[in-house]
Amino acid sequence: MSLSPPRDEASIAVRDRVYVDAKRAALWGLTSNAVLVIVKLVGGLLLRSSALIADAVNSIGDVTSSVVVRAALHIAEQEEDDDHPYGHTKAESIAGFGVSLLVMFGAGILTIETIHGFSEEPEIPHWSAGVVAAVCSLIKEALFRYTSQVAKRLDSAALRATALDHRSDALGSGAIAISLFAAPSLGGFGPYVDPIAALCVCAMLIITSAKMFLAIAAELMDQQADAETVAKVRDIAAEVDQVKDTEKLRVRKSGLEYFIELHVQVDGQLSVDEGHRIGHEVKDRLLAKMPRVRDVHIHIEPWTD
Image 1 (cartoon, rainbow, N blue to C red):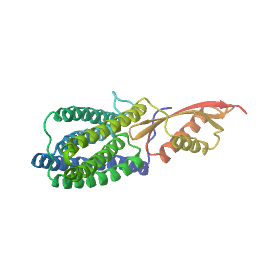
Image 2 (image 1 turned 30 degrees about the vertical axis):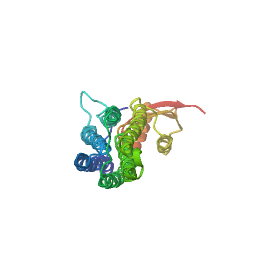
Image 3 (image 1 turned 180 degrees about the vertical axis):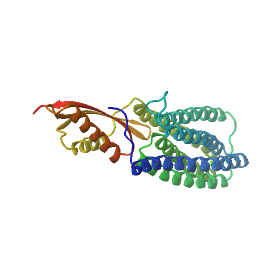
Image 4 (image 1 turned 135 degrees about the horizontal axis):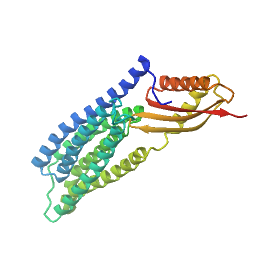
């Protein structure tokens, strides 16, 4: 019993809206990161701040990851085809997985380059570099709050990864701003504040991306959905007349959508035709009340007291 019945218009509208909101959040991140790359790179080169340049390189990675996430969301919403009978929903999770690896790799490269920079005599950047970093930090914090709200509402792995990246960038740029403002008053230690701040940014990026990696890896391994979603599936199934109980239940998250496998118990004296009708009613109700469910597989079992 795996063939999906036609969805009602309201259900289709909700599902489509999920992807519209996710793509809009990704587009905002892409546009903002592109602007920040120019601001940080120009500011770092003109004001001779290695921390700002390191932050600019990180933002280049953010632009790339935003493009990947935006493209993956477009692929994920495509319908099933002969080669992908379960749809393309995992493209969203794969994009988030790729973002985490990209951030981790970029942070590692920046760490090596910054350490090599200690062999040269560092200079204290102009105080205006701190202003640039502070403005970038505020923009990134605003992006984090917006993207994290959308990610939480849609339960999107890719947007969660992007939001965490925004937050780490905001904290990193904030730390750079503070260190650049404080450097002139630290005497002989002042010239080393900028590269040390760059190393702190790199360490924060590596830790954040490692957390992203582990969380998304669990999703790609078809981890059971959260307890609230599982309970909701059981409650909806129990609403159907003549459903005695629900037994085995698997709910796996695939990108922004879910796949459900449910064993429903009915009176064993019912006809095959009647059991089949009840199973379809359960499935229809789940698809109607949970628009983000891509497909439901129902198995009918005889109920014993």
